[in-house]
Length: 481
Image (cartoon, rainbow, N blue to C red; front, side):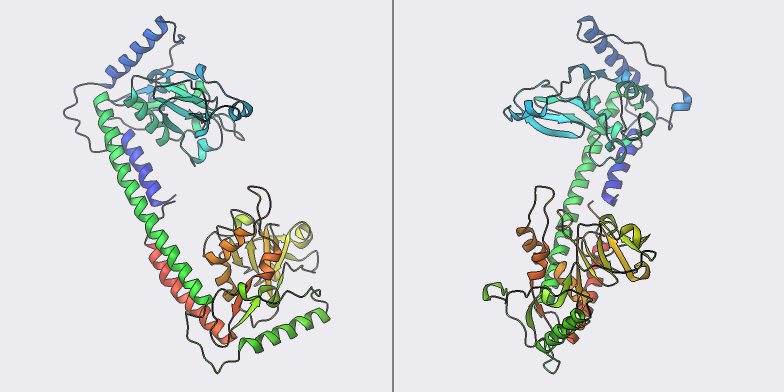
């Protein structure tokens, strides 16, 4: 959880404990007054036939009280402080929603999920998601206020109370506490109405409640400004990183040395090495790649560099031939970090367990995620510290293995981490929505400027040095997410 998220959480926790700076000396009302007003409203609704009567909830015991309350506050059950309107929730089938005009908001467990042409409610009410792992993870809001004219399906509790101020406070309270003691089911957690009603609530006097809401809104507004500034700084960092990578790939990052062996000579040696590997049956002979056309060249190259296709200098998606009993590294997609770090970890498995149905690689191979959104998120890494130097992983990877040490994998990573490479890859996506991928052909045919080997080393060293400075700057920026 980021510093900003922790700060927001701390604000909520302090609010429900009465720890925010509020002038308590001028308070003339009590929480009992508020509870009586809520009860009077319930009785009126029951009398008019708009609410069913229910048996009283048990009093809150001392053992249930999670913390001490300020003067004038009381412990109450959530059901005592609220008016249940769950009976008015009516789900609409997907077919019904598809044929309706998209006018009014349609709410589910975590917010608006669709638009429909009719509405159930037109007053502000508190909605609380009642099912799903989100009740524990809190990845999206648990409790939120719905406004305007809207429809609610049967995955969110609908709650009313004395007025909007009380609803806002109860929303704050539910979002601040741990709900796990009130959930049923483990595989599919659920917060049913009976458990919801039993939640112990710290209820302040109405005047304090109003001031707390204003105070929390004010502090959250500051958090919003803080978050915008953080995102702006992160965007500048992103721009800076990509500028470094683009300069590296265009020969603008380090000086050239005309006395060094040119990349033309380098390419001949790489091709000779490839022929040796084919002759030794280490790799299979592949079809020749097309010559590079003028319209494929994005910029002018420095002296000593040469344009090549990646498939001319590296093997794409090689296979391993090793003993079944050998312990190797296993890398699912979750163990490869997003972004520019290139970090990954691995598990240890026997080769016999993972040689089929997975992508093969070995130490120092480059792994590139090929599926959305992992590809856009720059999930790529140089495979390191693999058990016995070999491994396998998710099928959603393309593997790049240079034919010769004259091509540095760290130099190629400058390309694979660049926005230019990502943007061009996205343009070639194939597959259905949510399952789109870049192809092997895209990587194999990608055109890159190849520098002399000595310059590759200088480029990698320079990028690493600049990266250290950028990382230091970034580490001083509070993470927005």
